[in-house]
Amino acid sequence: MAELAKGIRAYIIIGLLAGLAALAGIFTLPPLDRDESRFAQATAQMLESGDYVSINFLDEARNKKPVGIHWLQAVSVAAFSSAEAREIWAYRLPSMFGAILAALACFWAGQRLVGRKAAFAGAALFAVTVLLGIEGGIAKTDAMLVGCTTLAMAALAQLRAGKGKKTALLFWFAIGLGALIKGPVTPMVAGLAILVLVIWERKANWLKPLGFWPGPLLAIAMILPWLISIQIATDGGFLRQAIGDDLAPKLAGAAERHGGLFGYHLLLAPLLLFPATLTVIPGLACLTSALRGRSDEKTAGAARFLLAWAIPVWLVFELLPTKLPHYVLPAYPALALIAGWGLMQMNKVAAWQKWTSWALFAFAGLVFAILMPVLFVVYGNNASWDAVRLSLAGFEGGFELGLDPAIAAIVFLTAALFAILTGAALMAARGRSAVMVLCLAVAAGLGWQVMGRAAAAPNAYAVRLADQVRAARSYSQTIAGIAPEDIATASSYTEPSLVFSLGTDTMLGTAEEVLAFAESRSDPILIVLDLSRDADLRALWFGDTIAADSAWREYEFFERLHALGECHRGLASGTNYSRGDETTLVLMFTRCGTGAAREGMDQ
Image (cartoon, rainbow, N blue to C red; front, side, top):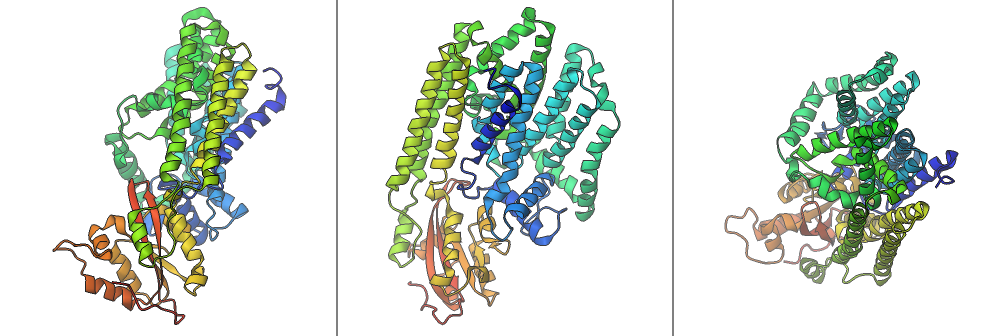
């Protein structure tokens, strides 16, 4: 372990591990609904409009989160891609760098708290955890948030060891950047930790460097100019909506149906903290022993710091009515360092503590080894009865029967490899080589990322509805005689991924609003109708009985379609995972202007 943790080599290894974990699927996963596509589309609109103050999704102001992640994404897209290209990987790169920053800051903090070898082990485990890898590959705030928060906590750990003004400046920089990324979360985590430590230890002299005036001024200078600008641009609406429409509902109840009982995050921890689950309970045993006075004061102080870092923020999010798995991610670096501590002290803890941790690790491995292939089988093809009926009626594309044998083989082989690595890590944990345990546990963590995010998820064709629509439009020159960039889209399938995939000129609305929009334009329109969201429209399309009071009438509906000059029709089929519905989309190219318009709908 000492050789791996030595010098700059340790930082390089940890950075590479975090980068590799985040990279799994970063180029192959489609834009995800809903938050990722909303963030990416808002950034794309900044690049298109040149307005880097206001945050908008289509014509709607998105006054929920600060602007920091959008600026970072805009820099990434401008450097490596373009807004027109709609390449989601370019928007994800800041999250990957946020994950790398978090892992490196975890190692820096851990060296002061648990020693270099335990810090290396903990940071390496943290770098490949399931939750950090997922967030590191998604174009939203949380990976960069945990990077800023971990950097702030690492600076605090250094201040406790006697570091001075330069470290304090770094702390305030991390606070400012974290506030620009996700508002109060980074200041809350650091503030709660400071409060708990001051009350617990009854001393605060180590905090004196934080009063060095350039530090707070730096944080204010990072935040205030944009905050003033956005308040002016929105007539004071940003803070009102961010607090009143976004934060307050989460404090009052389960906003957007994301609720859960107290203990929600604790129940998910064995899965999301994997592979650090392997040694976290021995680490907690070491921490408890230190607090009981069985170690020196330095070790006890480290234990108090780790608890002050992890427990307050964990309790806040357990008590918060709105719950999402990633909320407690800022506490994970502390838990990973505890796990690294446990790994280095594995032979000094009770057998039941080791076996409990091993059982949780085995449970997580078993769940993942079964669940990921099952999800791939369920969503690996997107055939549905509605898609078959539309195909028989002359609609092109849109579904596949059965699984691709080559892709299925890759998914099942990666699942088998993951299971083997998990079992090997468990077997090694019963020996005495901490290096072997760490290497196999890290390999199992990377194995999960490859299995879940590089193999299974990108090949779940049923959840790629927006990709199917984009693919159909990309062939519009061939199938409809019109260039993709010359065709607008109006859709009653309203998921944000469709907007990001097709562009800002995409119109979203009900089926009636879509038809009205197409009728109001003289240029070519791709009409997308979501049959799963309108039972009467679906019944009308397939010739079934519709409700007597339905707004749709057969003659009027098809007459309106005929008047639009349909020149090609296709379909997309799959699952809307945001709503949990089987979904079939009707795709119609209209007003192609090539003289090749067909006679109209088969009725």
